[in-house]
Image (tube, rainbow, N blue to C red; front, side, top):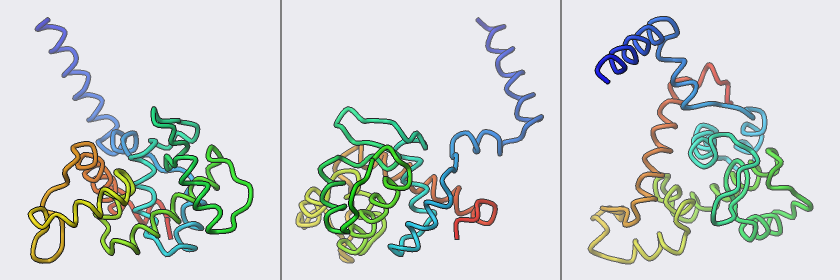
Length: 182
């Protein structure tokens, strides 16, 4: 076992030396659908880097993924949420597995949550846990600081989700010029 680990670390070191850390980050933080992200972000005035981060966290850029709860596509929208959003936008026919539709509806939802909660972290919490839960958390005086922000995100899954989105956003911001998300 000791030799297997030594070989693994040797090859890992050689891989890092040959291809650099950016190769690993490119795998962890892929970026596709830049045009669709740019259009939806401009339409709804949402930071395109935030949209890319949500897509990375929700689906890893897998357009046909379906969650155990039935959320679909790149931005993992529940069909009921997508139907509500499409009606509100007068969007017409859509397919949640079609990247353009999913990104447009998901970005619109993100813009509504950002407007409702006035804060990026709270909007991400609401995107993951639902706006009803975030409203409930904010009504608990013991869980809110003097500035009106949550002291603690009660759901571990949502805490991890927000952390993952913000980590991806940090990376995408670093690479922003390269990705040309404007």
